[in-house]
Length: 80
Image 1 (cartoon, one colour):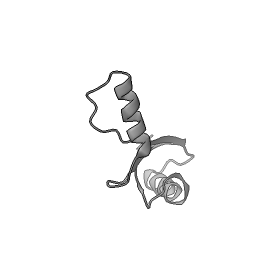
Image 2 (cartoon, one colour):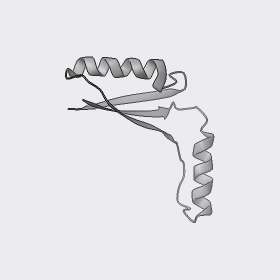
Image 3 (spheres, rainbow, N blue to C red):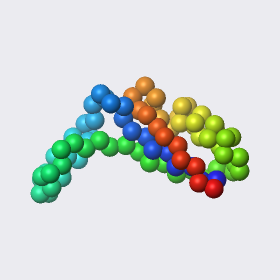
Image 4 (cartoon, one colour):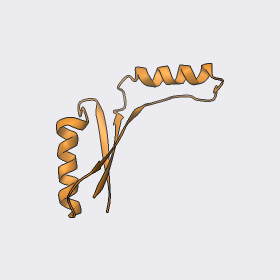
């Protein structure tokens, strides 16, 4: 089963990389960008056919390693 994890900064957390991307876009002539927030996208192929167990496993992976839950939110999408 494929698991897709989207990790984003929580509202209110400063995003210096997002600001740097915004400045770089402006320097390249893309002036209409008001705000940039960056995040992470992770795909996992896991050996699990039960969706509930797969979600529980990926949730544990996020909580223990993939996301810093103090400053980041994450969402999980399962395919298969």
